[in-house]
Length: 140
Image (cartoon, rainbow, N blue to C red; front, side, top):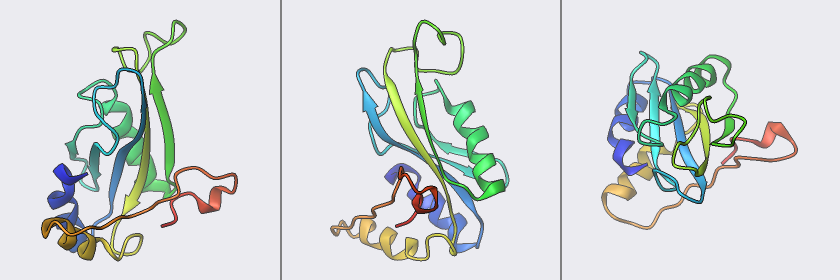
């Protein structure tokens, strides 16, 4: 997330909505670690990477969907014999990517969190990425 934080805050300060896709878990060989993030801006720019190119197109499309319908999504990407030619991770690993909308309404604390990160202060943000009650997904 740190590699895209400045761009995210710039969009946020302008009141723009941005979709943020973050690797929340990995299994076996994964091209990027948990915490790697990619932004999809409201003007259709991609910033950052969640997989080094393997699934960025799919995450970009999912980001556009999240911006449009305001529903966060947890998506798994990986390779199996059945889906080797679909969107996936060619290195044989699996990644789970959580895509959510970030703007001053959905994340009013972002500026304070970013300031703490810049000062190298301890800070944590906890977001529900999966829950039996879908209304809880995305809550902080």
